[in-house]
Amino acid sequence: MMGPLLVSGLMSTMLARHLPEEFAFLGGLRLVFIAVIGLMIGTQITPSLFAEAKGLAISVAALGVFVVLSTGYNYTVFRRIGGFDRPTAFYSSAPGGLYESIAFGENAGADTSRLVLQQFLRVITVVTLLPIGLSLWHGAPLGSSAGMTMAQAEVPLSHLPIIAVAVIGGIALGAVCRLPARQLTGPLVVGAALSLSGLVQMDIPQWLVNLAQVVIGASLGTRFKGTTRNTLAMGAALSLLSVGGMLCLAALMASLLSPITAEPFDVMLISFAPGGVTEMALVALSLPANPALVTLYHIIRILITVVGLSFSAHWFKPRL
Image 1: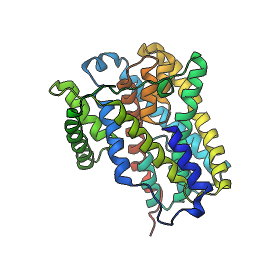
Image 2 (image 1 turned 90 degrees about the horizontal axis):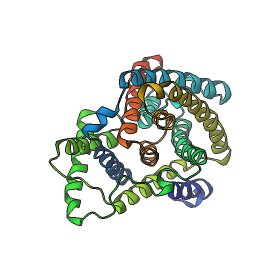
Image 3 (image 1 turned 180 degrees about the vertical axis):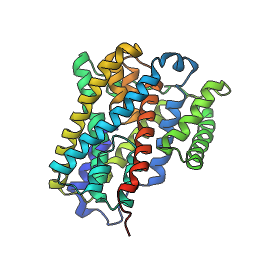
Image 4 (image 1 turned 30 degrees about the horizontal axis):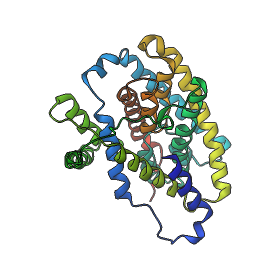
């Protein structure tokens, strides 16, 4: 994922004047491959997952505290140091719900270019720095850099029609139910239902997951189109300050919750880290830890954030 992201990001910023004005990544293509990742994570949800989720109620409460404190800290960074206006600073501060925060921000009159930049930089910074930091701590590569995956290397092509139906059904479910991060969570629910019921053996081929990560990475990089070097440098500096504070808070939460949940510190750390669900799940797999449990924490974090954003929308006048 990171290779295509860096290449497309560099092209979108350094070679922007050579690109057509209408240049953009195909949103529908990205949606399909996000759905593939969601389906893959959903297949990891088994009955044993719920037995492992000890102290979940306390963890959910802690996630709520994490979201509130992270948002307040980030707002101070973007408002006082970055000089953002109130709506842009607030919606840039959301530690989750990337697309929802952008949508709310647009409606509130936020500076869309700054908001999109900071939200994508949040995800990129976390999924880049955290695996590297954990790899240095453990003295060995972790996650996808160690070749870890939740996919199956050898899956017959005859499984592809079942996968396609599950992906389409998951996308439709997410849209109808208006789930947060619906492109991911709809297929995840379908994958979990199939896994828990035992009706269908759902294995995702490795080549399909690799392709999905390439597409997702390339699409993230194209978001930087039209961003100047100075704006990008300022955004990166603010993102490092923001993410650094959130990771310190996540580390504090992890140290407090580890004895309660009986999960190791590093597992709880990646469960609270406000980054990409996919990469955090891959890191969880290599610790080892149940990637579905880590994903569950991330989905709860996103839900709490999105609910908070919806309740706070009245603080800002909608754009006329």
